[in-house]
Amino acid sequence: MTNHKKVMFDVKDVMELTGLGRNKAYDLMKSGEFHVKTIGKQYLVHKDILENWLKGEKVSKKRW
Image 1 (tube, one colour):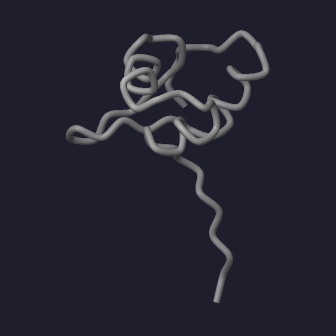
Image 2 (cartoon, one colour):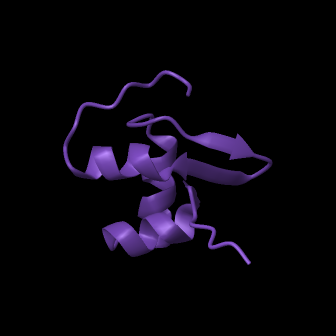
Image 3 (cartoon, helix red, strand yellow):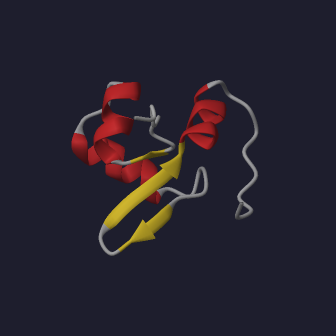
């Protein structure tokens, strides 16, 4: 059995990592501060992009 680590974070993950509430986490994901993929109604951000943004690093808005 392989050990898979989560690579894409959803709104619940963003809430846990940032301490934001649900509405603020959605606002952040929709803000354009960093690249977010939408699949249907679900917002996903790559863990590296979110972690770098949280560290204050300038985030490129280019696609991967």
